[in-house]
Image (cartoon, rainbow, N blue to C red; front, side):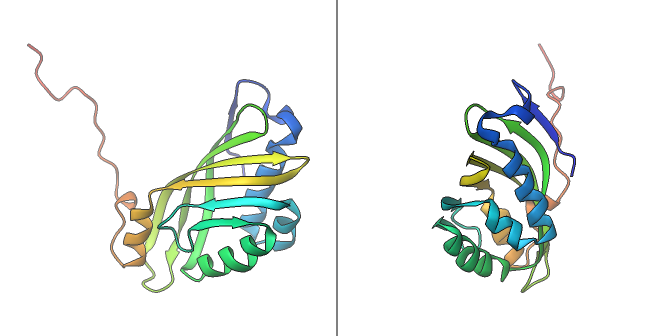
Amino acid sequence: MTPETTAAHDPATAPDGALAPVLAWYDAISARDWDTLRALVHPQMEFVVATGFPAGGRYVGPEAIFDDFFVRSFAAWNAITPAVDEIFAATGDVVVVRGRYVGRTKETDTPFDVPFAHLWRARDGRLTWLQQYIDTAVIQDAIAGREPAATRPPTVHTGGNREHQ
């Protein structure tokens, strides 16, 4: 995985090594390496998933995250992969990730490709907090078997379409 990394400082030296566990998370989730994922999670990690996303809600601790959220959420997908587009190493222990979830729903086998933003906090090489931002209407469209709007080519607006007086 080689996402573009943007930062006001060298992201490899982000405070408390916040960037390394975030990068490791995306590598491990793509490989479905559950042992590595569990090792990255702090015992009190808070995992906040958007309402409207399958199994959306607030999960605290590895058991809630892996044995509740992931089990229930993955029941909705034939396939789902987070594709990271860009990583911003922010101040302190915060890392911001922009990417897309790409996959197919289980019940209707409808494809989806929807942008997300993840805000992470990490401390001492472990993830302590995740906040997910996503257009859940696109996910709900796919689950219902409707072509999600985000899978259609976007309309490009250039601003040059009107007459100037």
